[in-house]
Image (tube, rainbow, N blue to C red; front, side, top):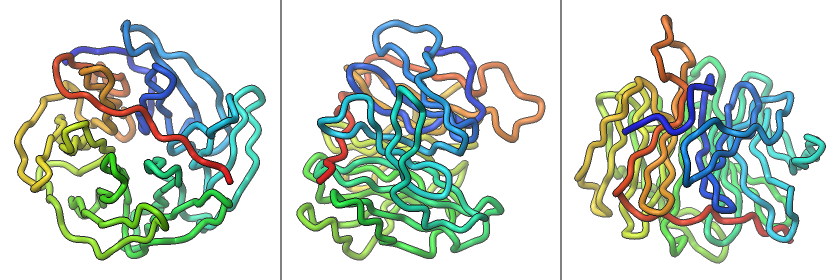
Length: 279
């Protein structure tokens, strides 16, 4: 696995395949970035906002507009101006957004986490087409992911602080969640960002484990990919190429390559990021 984009992120996250490019964020710096999926090189900074930026998804039919997990909530982000049109800010001042993603039906799911790591203070939210924001799961600590199967009927959700990945049944029409079951646990490191490939395998960045794990649909760990940095944070699959963001946050000294984006060819096919369907 080689460096694709040189070190640039304090806390890279939210890697997505959007418009033929790799789009990702630097959470604590509030930066939205993009890089070529075909040629290695520096990332382009699309916009910077004045609050943490957990992840984004494009809004269908509105070029240049993103739905963004930002600060203590969710907003529509205008890329040209950097303006945030707030939808809701349901989190307390002691928490911030973390990872987020759109499901295949066009709903936006985002995690909120406590800055101090208070156990059970994390929440998973769902944003529907009418911009209603609903807390759909509480009692988490550091929710990460989520990731959905192509049919939208299964959601994987990590709680990084607990070293656990849960699997939820999802009603693809209403977005209602069924009861979770434990899909996998990780002892050496913590599960972070995730994605599902076209064959239904779950790919997981392992923070603190210098690795990406691939799990079969039955929960079996069937591949471990070494990543030459301590803190991989998210994964994205584009055209048979695996992209991995990383973080320099909390490392002292900061090793070379921490915060870079890495890539490896000849793996699996992924899917472009789903768009948010604004009603």
